[in-house]
Length: 72
Image 1 (tube, rainbow, N blue to C red):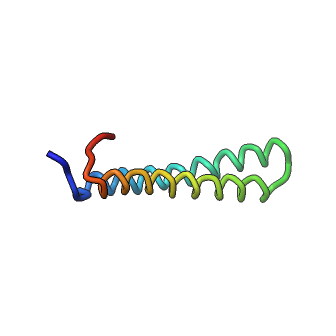
Image 2: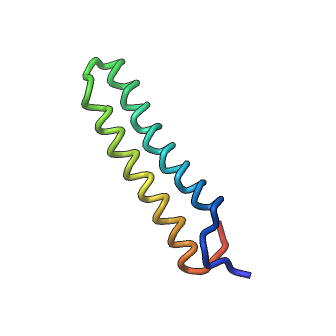
């Protein structure tokens, strides 16, 4: 049986993963900035990459539910 709607647990996982992507990107950017001593540059790059990763993950998960497929 295919699921065509998002449940609460699916939305919590989606939000948690999006937050994790953004925080991981910023954290890695902060780490590189502290090693190279270029303060805001890599934090912003990491933030942009984290947001892009979160958007891509969200798109892939929502597309799975819109297609009616339960193959995760």
